[in-house]
Image 1 (cartoon, rainbow, N blue to C red):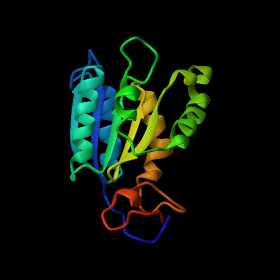
Image 2: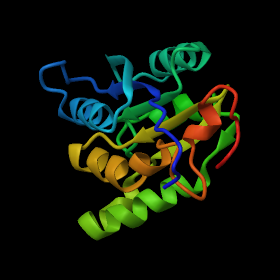
Image 3: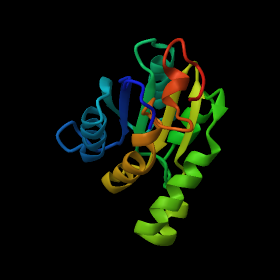
Image 4: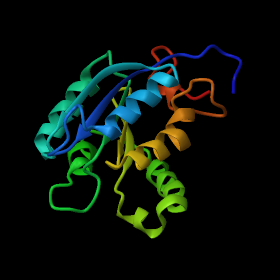
Length: 174
């Protein structure tokens, strides 16, 4: 950790689900709880049905919003017929964070074994906004936040982090 001051980020959370409501959205709520615990601000939170165009429209809106620096989605990353989050989001990204999915599956392997290969989670950058698409399970959200996002969204984390890529005036690592 650097000696620099912590810089809170503005994070939007999107739950992709055909069945969840605000009351039953354990995964989205776990992400909100963690981001607030870590000192970040909730920019927005929504639930949208698993539809490529609805997901894409909302994520694109947030990418264009200067008040959103980080987008975390949960759900729609599997292989069932309606899982379409990667297809919806991938085309919006300027750069892919290849190592995000790899690291997530490595951490997840320790918890759920070979079932982790069915996770199509991804990360990327778009318009100075970092985007992470996580599986819909609450456990997967905890694994991703605690094992990756907690550090990578902290501008003090060394030797590099994604926070410094989205903080205005920094746009670089370190």
